Image (cartoon, rainbow, N blue to C red; front, side, top):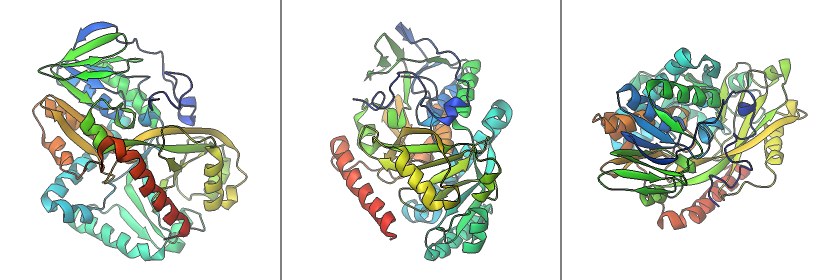
Length: 435
């Protein structure tokens, strides 16, 4: 069964998350019925598709977005809410692979993605409550020197001086876990309520002139001089199309499927901790750490710990989601091991071989963006804008991101799952053994 339907018992209902419990999705939009035309057809009403639609509508075009469930239903409404800096590769590693010029272009686009999100939340979605600060915890003191070298490189070569590297004592004063041996605090990054942001973005796209049809799963893409998207109840034909389903995109486009695969990640929300939240963090920042199978966490506005981690690589969710997350919380923060869990949910994201985003022209009039590999809150939005700009004839941002290395999985789509499962299992074992 497709990831669009496998793990959510009620079709079209948002995941049973704290986000959904604290947001107002509104009434469902009508599905696509009958034959329709648009200037641009967009698959997926997450950050990528909605930013693309909004950008196109503001430019005077009439885009139509088709969403299998609800706007913000997928990873855009379920994620950890962390607005990160850059990519999953360091700038120095990217420079070694791409050269300084292309790496600088990609960096500038990523920084624009953060600014775009902050500006949008400030003007159109204050309820999404953007807050600055993302800390990165390190499990080995030997990781401090590379972290300082990267921070110095960002400051000297990119003018980005927002990262402060801390030794063990200073970092534990900020993130009060006995396990971290140091870390860094990036005050140029931040965190946000992801579902409220997505819902506001959908409303903004509609105000600009975009149309969104929910409960309209795209089952086939017919390419040619025009592109026709087929749904169970209708068709949508347009001169251009954008495939923006990311991890929830069915295998509609073979080249995208060969380079991106879906994996699942999970989050638990504790009961409100009141003033006990300061037993975990000294400041209201988000945190991720240096495990390959990363832990990521932050506090909600009502002081619940929102703690994410563990991954699985099959289509279905595991039977016990809460237990391993509770164990991770207790290991990192024994001082709140007694906190009750109020919400548990999972979601699917797209991951590439290199954990870098995939922007691809799959036909002269079809572009795709996804594969953000857990780094998509800012990158997905700017990628959507880049897709729209490419259709409008301004491909600078699109080409800068498309230059990032995202090779096919060995064996293509058929072999990607077992190969990635083996690789991720190995890295998870290294995490547990402390390598």
